[in-house]
Every structure is written in structure tokens, then in C-alpha cells.
Amino acid sequence: MNKIPVGETIRFAYAFTFGEIGTVIGLVWIPLVINTIAAFLVERSFGGVEAAAPASLPPGFGFFALYSVVAVLIVAMVAVALTRQAMGLRQGPAFAHVSLGTAELHVFGGIAGLYLLCVIFVMGLALAVVVVGGVASMLAPSKAIGEMVGGAAGSVAALVGLGAIFYALVRLSFLFVPAALVGGGFGLSRSWELTKGNFWRIAAVGAATVLPVSLVVFAINVAILGPGYFASIAAMLQDQAHFAKYAAEQARMTSANMPLLLGTGLVFAPLSYALLFAPSAFAYRALAGKNVLPP
Image 1: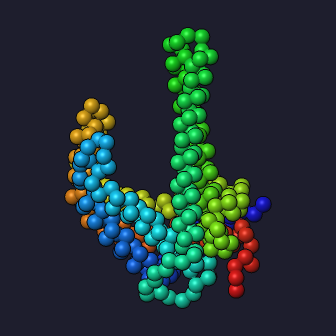
Image 2: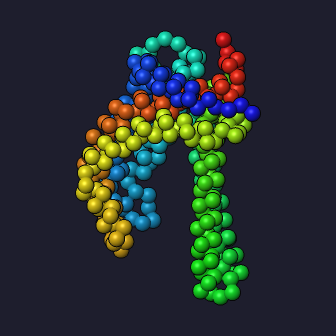
Image 3: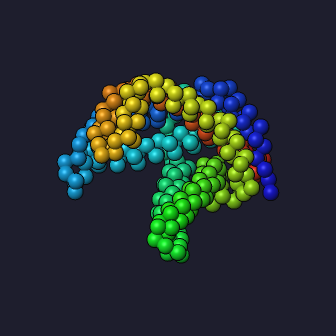
């Protein structure tokens, strides 16, 4: 069983990201700008609009659904471009890059497959929690004890289930992009196969690469939204009866700051994506063998 070399993977991710930052930006800036503009238009047409009626779809829903598909395609474009560069399948600088071919469609399918599996897992977990809680409650000697035991059993089942879902999604997703590029298909089964026995190593790599830049972006977004936004969240938690009022208040504050929020995301996106996909490119070669790539 091959193991991911954690230190080498982390070093490669940072060396690739900052050592080839000009190429990284050249590969991703056009898709990311398109995505940012589309996100702004969707927010303006959909984000602040009230639903016309409880039984109807909100205005702009079709535009939002279309944007969701486009956003996933853009992620696929970025993933393929950066992974190819990191794996050596593409060499040299890049000033602008847009591509939508078989590889991007395979990665798009992989992302869609991950989403579908996540929905199935969550629905299965919800059913399991109800069943476990109900059975535990019925086995209790009294109704009062049954409610306590059933609630506790359901909570434990939920925690265990969420951990299992996270474990499965990490293993399915970590190597699916390079696996799709090299072997074709969606790459999910190949990722699951290669990551056996490497979950904690993947977690360590993610904590050292993806987490730091994510925390920086989060801190900047917190500063942009300001204390009023989080005071509204605290008030909502204390006053559940007026949940909708506080949710609308938070939506207004988010909408007012959307240009800054989107701008922050655009500036940091090349770093975020490079630190996300470079480790998997390096780890794939370590796990599958150095001769897996075409010359």
C-alpha cells in the first residue's frame, strides 16, 4: 500500500503555487473573471428578491440554476488547467487560457457525481438517524426515558454518519481530477482505490495547504461584513420566532458588500485553487507511480 509523502506534497504545493504564480494566474484568470461577473449578476437579480408566493419558484431561479451549472464548469476548467500544469502534462507560461473539452467534461461529471453521492449519503443518514432513534426509544422501559435515549442514540448516529460521509467524500474527491485526466472517466473510483490508508495524510496536507488561505479569506470577509452582521446572527439564534427578519437583514448586508466580497474571492482564487489541486497532482504520481503519465 503506497503512502502519500506529506512533507514533499506540501512543499510541492507551495513551490508550484508561488514559484509559478504568473502561469497560475494566466491559466485561471479568464474563467474566474467570468464567474465573478456572473455571480454578481445572479446576486443582483436573485439574491435580494422575495419569493412571489410560497408555492412558486422565486424570480430569477432559472438564472440561478443556469449559473450553478456554469460555475461548476468553470471549476472544472480551472481544475484541469492547474492539474495539467502541476503534473507536467502542460509546460511553459500562460497568459490566457480557456478550454472546454473531454477532460473538463469528465471533471464536471465527477463533481456532479460527488454532489449526487453527497445527497444520497445525507438522505440515508437522515433515515438512519430516525430509525436508530426510534428503535432505541421503543426499547426503553418508559416514555420519558425513551425520549432521552432515543435523542441520544439519534445524535450519536448523526455524528458517526457525518464522520463517515466526510471520510468517503475526502477519499472520493482527493485524486479524482488527476485520475480523470490520466485514465479517463470521472475518476471517483480510482481516487477511492488509491487513497486507501491515506485519509489522515490527506487531512494533514489539506490542513497545511487549503486551510491557511481559507482562513485568511474568511478573516477578510468578516472584516468586510462588520460586527453588525454577526450581531444579527447572534440575535437570530436567541429569537427564533423572528428568524425570517434576521435572515433578510443578513441578506441585505451581504448584498451591500457583495462587490468587496466577490473582489476578495477573485484576488485569492488563484492561490486557493492552486493550493487545492497541486497536492492531488503530486500525490497521484506518488500513489500511482511515476510512469503513469504519457511522455
